[in-house]
Image (cartoon, rainbow, N blue to C red; front, side, top):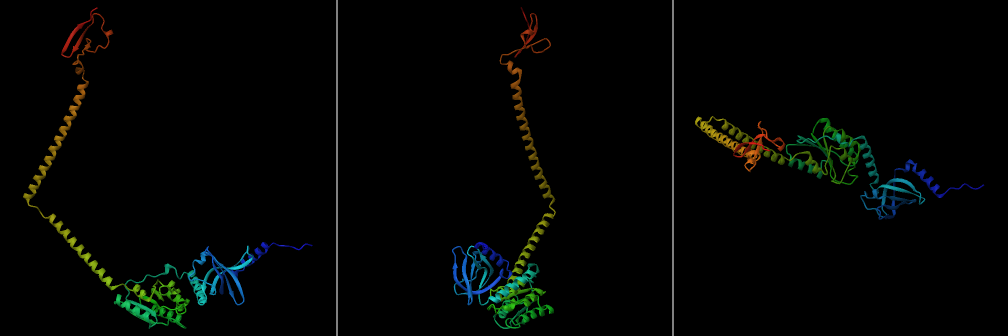
Length: 393
């Protein structure tokens, strides 16, 4: 009995289907060291991930590689997210990388992305839930550390821009154990006691670990549930936290948050001055219009009325005479043209050139010699008179 055989392609295809249906391999984070790194001219990346116990071939296509925020190289420890699949033509299985980050902050980054995705699906980032920031707040609440550059910058900017606003600071713990509870408690305190019109929640810059309290779900939900509009001000311009996405408005720095929270008193004063100037100009213009209107309504001197009427009558008389003359000239011209046409068509005009007209006894024109039999009498009409004639043999 001959043994049952299969082709290489069938084996590879079978293994591919097995791996494709393994759910745990469809979206997996793999930790390892880059080896045999090659950036192809096509833009694709070919490399190997290795650790103490083994190696795994990997490929990252151009569409994903172009989004990398760092320059990968051999020996670098990374976290790579992707799907394990079989390359049938080569008979190898490999990791198809969709995302890659340097190892070290990898676990925090994964937690950040997972929470961001979950809260986004719940709608916590939706624009429809964003509350408008009051334009002229009476009180600005600040949730941050009581010492440091951030709180000083916020106080300095608000005091300079809009001294009418009161500043209430809740000294919160912004990093380390208990920070998330402290921040959430501060937000809830402001809401329960209605202490502010606007809240600034944030801190100065730092590492991802330092800023992590603002990536906690507890803080995110406290911001989302706040009835008071919240401006997030965490870290530097390039730092983005979950709090930034949930807040009603994100500021790149604490100083920028203070500028967004209050208007500029100097700009307001300038605007008021401009409006006053425009208002005064409008009032003066309206008064001038009323003065001109009243002047037009003032009774005229009777003599001036008579003189104006006389001038108007002379003007109208002149127009009437000119119109009559133009009509008369037009009629004369038309009559002359019609007379010339009639004269050109008149029989008398023809007779003056030597022609005559024979007329029968009843006055009709004789048009043929056949009408003139011997002995017939007729009248011959000439240019200067007429004669009686008789037809002879």
